[in-house]
Amino acid sequence: MPIEDRTYVTDADGSITFGAVFLTRYDEGCWGYKDMEESAGPVESRAPLSLLALLSELKDPDSYANAWRQRCRDWAAIPDYDEGDKIKLAAPVTLTDGSTCQIVTATHYRRGGQKRRCYRIEETGGLVRLSKASLAGSELLGSAKSEASPVLAEFFAERSADDAPP
Image: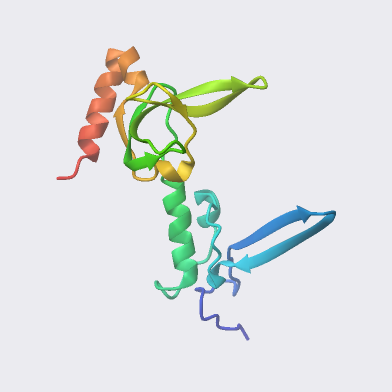
């Protein structure tokens, strides 16, 4: 006899597939972990969309699991900008020196033979590192790709017009 689950819609074979977060830590010679199933409301919410697609449907749209899945989708929706893209952040970011910036251009610097992402501040020309979270809700003002090619410029202009609200 199949067991009825209160959180998940049971698959045809009687199974469910759920998400879990395992936080790991190595501290002072000891290794440990903390595990949380998605319906327990984990804070960490960076699961890839491909993983979310594998999970069973939820019965309650107001569940912790649904909120966790939405936070994962929101994280995945934050754009990854290309080198040279001019970006307007959703809100000004306050820097350690007390100044703020809102319009930046994606660039990089080299450290230890590796390219590291950073952003050039429009007003001062200084470089700043920004977290992915600070790019949430940002807007692409200009694409380096479109400036390099008239064909790409036309493509990006059409795409922007399609994305514009009615």
